Length: 237
View 1 (cartoon, rainbow, N blue to C red):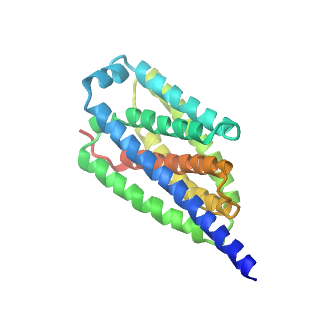
View 2 (cartoon, rainbow, N blue to C red):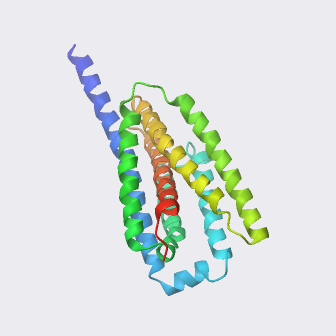
């Protein structure tokens, strides 16, 4: 009996440590991205390097970010915890550099309001995902299909807008609304998935790497929610 109680206590301890580590990584990534965005927006040299050559500099950063996500996701079982950590932090830095553009597009009070709104929405949906008895697996599949549809619609809309040289305002609004709905749902889905994974956490290197990937998913949920809310309600300069 005593041994069973000890194992149960250890299991609960590892579960709590895994969840804390995951959300801690996510919070750290947000802080790093915020610092990176502010530093970039305050540096004429970086601004010229990234945005001084049309879309080229931004495109290079975007490709680097996508490459890092693909590398982390596909190689997570092979690489070390240190390598996964470096890749995760590098992604947060690069994403912060691309996000620096919002300081020149939107007013500071709009950015602050969007951030706090996102934080509240993210927290509520994380708690829902962690506490609901409903299995959100099937919902997650539909949300991912919806996300694919949003990506396709964004690309097609961007191409049409470039050709016609006319912004597709209604399409952009619909895409932003769909993005909010999708990533609100994905926040709950990812939170439940993290809780399920935590049931088997044992503190070894594999689970430390899994916590980094899980944190990346939560980070992407947060950032995409923030940007969608900014597009919908942000006051432009």
